[in-house]
Length: 314
Image (tube, rainbow, N blue to C red; front, side, top):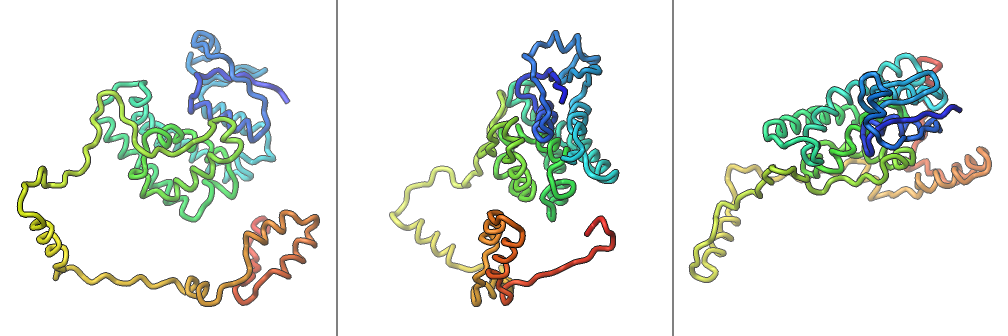
C-alpha cells in the first residue's frame, strides 16, 4: 500500500483524525518534521494539516481524514451503506461546527494560544454544553455514534474533545453528560486511539488561563464567627437542624426494581461474563454452545429469537 506524508504541528487535534483513521486502516502515514515554510509551499491555503500523496496534496483536516478512512472499505470507517455515510458526514460536520469552535475558545487561552476574555469564555462553555447535551441524548441507547462500531464520526468528535476533556472539562461540568463520558472513555481506550493520542485522563480540576480569575468557593455566609459561650452556638445549631420544615414533604423511599428484588431473593448461578470468556476460549462454535447449555439458567434468564422486517437486518 502507498505511503503518505502528513504536515502538521506536533499534537494538533486536527491531525488526530487522519492518524487514528490510518491506525484502523493500517495505512502508512509519515508525520514530517514541522516546518511552516514547507506547508506554505505545499498547501494551496498555506495552512496545516496537509497530506502529500502520489496524486497531489490534500488539504483541510476533514478531507484528509475522509481520504485515509476511505482507503479501505472492509473497516467501514465511512459506513457500510449510503445512509450510514451521510449520517457519518453529519457528525463530522457537527464536530467542526458545534464542538471545535467553542472547545478551542475555551482551552486555547489555557494553552497560551490566545488571550483570555471572560465573555468569550462564558459563551464557549455554554455552547459546548449545548453540543454535549445533544450528544448525550443521542448516546442514551448507543455505544457509538453510527452503527455498532467506531467510524469516522466517533474519531472526529472525540478528536475535537481530547484537549477540553484533559484540560478544562472538570467533573462538575461533565456531571450532566454521563453518556458522553462513557462513550469518550470507551473510544480513547481503544488501541488505535492510544497509538495516536496516548493516555487521555479526564480533568479533575479546570485549568485556568493567564488573566483568568479562579472561581471562588461558595461563601459560608458567616465570615468570622464571634466568640461566645462555649457550646452555645452549637446547641442552637442542633436545635435548628432538628426542627423539621412543616412545608417540606416527607422523603419517599425508593422502591427497588422488580429485577433487583428477584436477584436478591433468587440469585441466578449463570454469569454472562463467565460465559463470554468460555465462548471466547472455545476451539469451535459447537464446543462453545455445548458449554452454554450446561451453564444456562432458564429460571433466571430467557432467550429471545427475533426476525426483522428486512433481510439485511437479520
